[in-house]
Image (cartoon, rainbow, N blue to C red):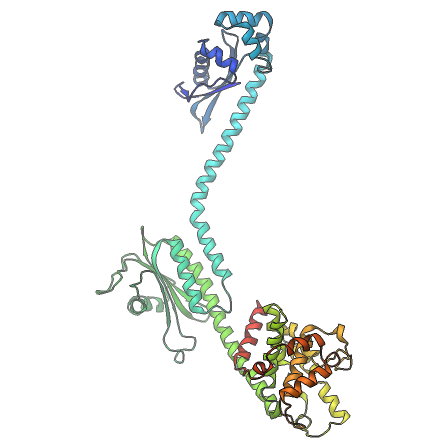
Length: 523
């Protein structure tokens, strides 16, 4: 069918485009197709209802109005030549009337026009239904576009809140977190500057408050500190939940002129711990919408800061406990002082050489650091005994891996290092302790720590013997390879620079690495 669109004044919209070559020929010879469609369009628009008619040339013409919210926009007209006109005598008369060659026309209409005049009523219903459906879709799209525009800012704000919550990581420093928050506020609220102020964690001990500023380079922390002291602190101290000042009086000499600002406390249930400040809105004043957003952000920020402080306190406490624990073990056996750190360092180098992924290397390092913690349950007299141990004393020594496992079993973040500690004295030949496991039953981590433990023990002074030379230690490792320690690991270790490994001096980073691992497990 040939379809055309007409506006509310009855004028054709666009160009009249016949649907096939035969209709185009009829249109080109001036058969009055456009005038017939125009006439029906005028009736449809005037009467505001779907209708159809047969034109003087025999074409079926149907039309339906286009309305939107009870306003007439125009109409759609469709027309077609019924197939009854395109055969025999009717076709000859049509060609004669409009001056077309009958034989040429007959060849053009093959398979083109397939509808009869009896279907015009049905087609009118279809046209009306299609138009209504398309209008409904377009209306929905228009409303959706409007809704999308209205929600654009809300979406950005929700995205910022989501990003803030997603970046709440215990390893993120409060200052870095607050800077990210200020950058996000700048992107969403159409302001030129934002600042965050964090009070000292321990007033009187941690110095002055921390101030983070994001905006023009000329806006310094000192200017923000002065704004806090002269304008915001008195208001917030009086219990105000927020400060909105759209006529801010800037101090003379300020490098960056502040014209308006919005400040919200970063408050916990206990007390305010800081302030979040938005400054210099580009268009208009700060309003309730801005206030609601900044309040939501400040609530999340305050939660992070509070938990960050709590975590820092717990970390300090745990640091002290670990130092006290390692010191107590060293105090029991001065000959093994530093042994655990050296075993951890050797284990790490061996695990790296074996091509293990970083997270697995870290677990092995931690297991090496804690592998002898069970000796806290072994009497000093046994640990320091210079001569041969009795069977009962050996039983106490052989129990230290199990004791270590029990000590650490209550720390969920270290569950993955306990098996390595428990098996570091097991042997490939099955003659190790505490369980007598054989080679196939041993985890690689336990084998690595066991080999590192052997190397450091051989090259360190003990109560019952002096340290071996590196050459003798290598000979001994080759002798016990495959029985006491894993053969592949021995070959790998001996391919490395043992002198460099043994002269490494691990420092206090071992405790920090332990805490970092526990942080990761907590997450």
